[in-house]
Length: 241
Image 1 (cartoon, rainbow, N blue to C red):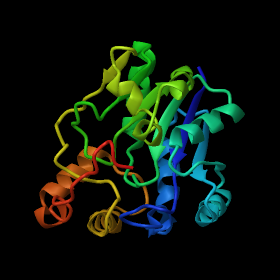
Image 2 (image 1 turned 90 degrees about the vertical axis):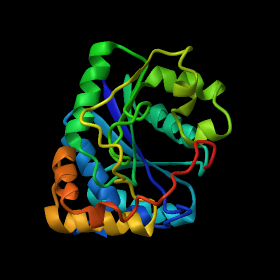
Image 3 (image 1 turned 60 degrees about the vertical axis):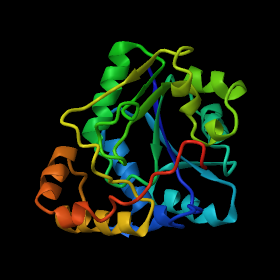
């Protein structure tokens, strides 16, 4: 079984433009996601899927600088970007990552991959019944399923890549993985300036290496003023790009 990681990344975020190339602890956000994905130890290959927009020339340059392959495709049709990667790579399994998760935990990635392999399912995600902080979710899908939904997915499902699968779970073999204890009250993704303030404080304290989610949660439990920095942020609905 060949496992391919694909990280979707672009400069044109609506709420925090350029966030994927902001620097944290001497690395860009994208570099941190690339490193965490690789440190999971489950990937045979890794590709960043960015867009054909001129602004994303900077993403391409960063990929070259940190030594990761890059593929360019449509801006909003991210599923087509992923399928474009699969046209150039042989893979049985795809792990989907987003470049706005600089606190990604390699241990969680490895655990999700183990469960996916053992279960032999079409798709696994940690976000159906969320117990992890937003920003640490893991998705694993069979490459054949991504190719199958190309003729089925429409509108926002093409932006979110896998959403057609888990919203049509009667048509696919889907597992929702939960991890205890429930830490879903924490928000550790990067989408706004307040998210940035929290993540920057975490990196300033823990340094460069990825940190286990429970370690983060324990540290933040003693620092409620930090943990509350971004609790007011409303996550976009699935139908919103």
